[in-house]
Amino acid sequence: MASDSNRRQNSFPHLRYPIYREEVPRTAYMWLKGKHILDGAEGLWRIHDSIYDLTDLISSHPGGPQWISVTKGTDITEAFETHHLHGVAETLLPKYFIKKAESPRNSPFTFKEDGFYKTLKHKVQNKLPEIPKNVRRKSDLIIDSLFVALLITSPICSWLWTKNLILGGILTICVSFILSGVSVAAHNYFHRRDNWRMYLFNIIGMSYEDWRISHALSHHLHTNTINDLEISMLEPFLQYLPSKEKPIWAQMAIFYYPFIFAAVPLGLLVMELFTAIRNKHSKKLKWANLIQFFLPAWMWMLGGLSLPSTILLWIVILLIASYIFMAFGLTAGHHSHQNFFDGDIPRDRYYDWGLHQLDTMVERVEYDDNHFKSLTRFGYHTLHHYFPTLDHAELKYLYPTLLEHCEKFEVEFRTCTYFKSFISHSKQLVRKRHNNFKERKTMYVK
Image (cartoon, rainbow, N blue to C red; front, top):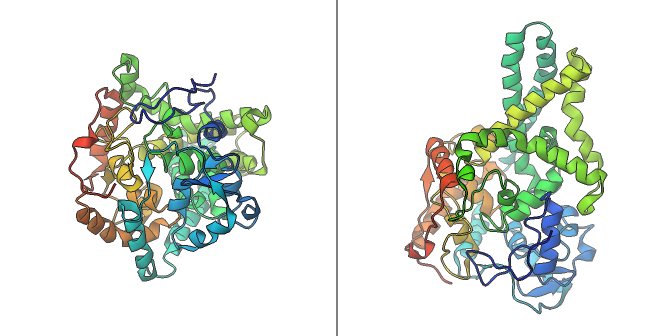
């Protein structure tokens, strides 16, 4: 059932509540359907307070057609600002202009030229030519090596179970770690223009296509707000939003959340197949869905186990890999009890999007000097949110610029270790009281 159309957001009561946030199953396409109603895009594409017709750009969009086609009828301001770094898109945009929007944006975020994010973006644009050329090959080599390792070890794992249960169990854990590494590294690629490595994300059972919506367009752009689909999809089992009404059983999630972590990708796989087969929420089966079953087919053909045993082993590998994926993903910095979540008091009714990202992040720092760990453990996370189309190998060259920029604006750049992030994540599941970000000392242009 759709939400009350007059309902308001908790932290931003001047903005309307997402129409289908409580709809079950909570799918990426249902999230988009709600935006069609609230964004005031008038069936086209909205950027800031203007309406554009990007229909002719779908087939020729440098990033691939999906980014444009799925967002028709929505406000893409945040996506436009963060996904275009070289200034070309801004010069082309006027040719697609139709009219001024008739309603205000249903978003609290601003992108003023002298604001925190836009001035940082200009600095990064000037810094990009100084980044060593071909540095992206480091990431390519890592994910390609992990994929080859998965191809080799997964059928050996199946074979070992027919010979030695202890060795089979040990290699099962190893294969799970490799699979999680492939999946996290593939996340680096589905943010960018279409490429073959983004399809590797599907091997863990999830869908790069859906995650481009739920992760890149929802979580990245509306982090920890009521529009963050990655928060709502975990409810009611994991309730990250602070609320005086949070029940005790939800606070007890600090004891059972590992089981939720393990089940998420497998649950998303079942949900995707269910909605696609029933053509629910405009979801359809595509050839990329076959990739989700590549690993068990590969293990069965080469491993020597029976088909039922192979499927069981594959499910075990998925559960372990899923836990690793979620454990590192949900401690990347956003789920600290010190961060902003919907229900907290924001800096202002309207404020800079870049400052909001800092309010929702406590950066994990122990992976900054190791590119392998960074790529496979969601490292360099703040800059990744700011500039998602850049490769992780490029981000480390921009950190001095970010730190200098935060110092200039007198904004705190918060950091912690993985262990502290892990503890803080648990505290957030328990937290009921709101944080007050109005009280934080920050100088910035509104």
